[in-house]
Length: 378
Image (tube, rainbow, N blue to C red; front, side):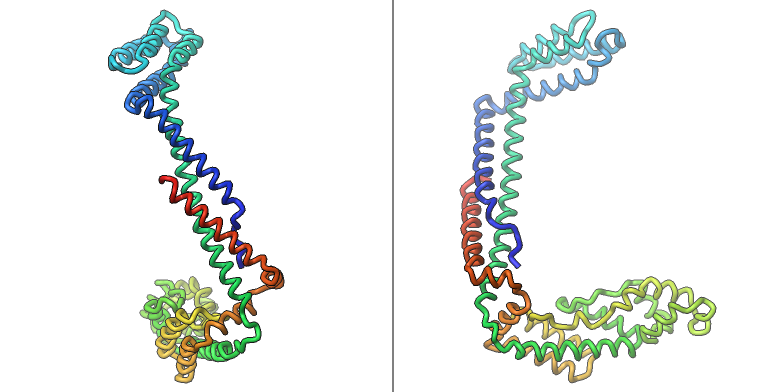
């Protein structure tokens, strides 16, 4: 238990959150100072011009395709003519056009054009910086929120560990274990007999019916398997017989069933499911669940076992349900958990006070991180 991530990184995460928020605010302030509308207009035209350069530079320079060269100059002229008169840094774009309107272009001409565009590039960079810092801050917040949830889980684990450390290890847990084990053994045997003697059709119908009981977690049978046992005469035979048939050769199988191929297909594909089908989902775990969980689980088990098991098994399920009403149930359950789950290292840490100190440090770190998230805008 309590092996989840500790609080050691919380101080660094808080520092990152605060610096990330400041960076995002500073970047937004620079955008607002220049005017977001003006920056957006410049950035859009800057990006359009970069796309023109990317499209034409290689073929329009040197001894490239003259037709492409003329096309590029025409595109440049249309680009500049289409610029708004009040566009910030319009003169930079016009200067680029002047550089490009030559008989022959070289790589140095494009380098000169890009240098002339540096004021527009700086404006576009302000928006990129704003978006990048905002994205980083949002990711930091997501990481911090996830960290709070992790710390909540660790706190719950440590609290449970502390509670087990306070448990009475000499408590008479057999008062819970004996009736639970008696029920588990009885229901396991009863289901084994049911599976071995009842028709496959009845067994699978029972398993399908347990879907209405969410705490009885049987894996539902494959659809092709249930279809086969419902529609073929061999579905009235027990599951062990069907598994035995599936191992027969085709010629031998023909003496036992009408449609050997259908059996081979349906049962052969579901052999693992059928062999593993047992009463495990009908048993109660040890250490047992909380009193509330045991009450609802046992209530479902009483209804489910009543569909196939002898009366004495159902009576044992009722006895298990009554355990949840014991005044000392929580004490006995905690003692059972402590005996089953505490290892030597955890016992030593509990005795030394290390677990309690870890719990207090984790709580403090969780509260500090949550407070920081509340204080900083999302």
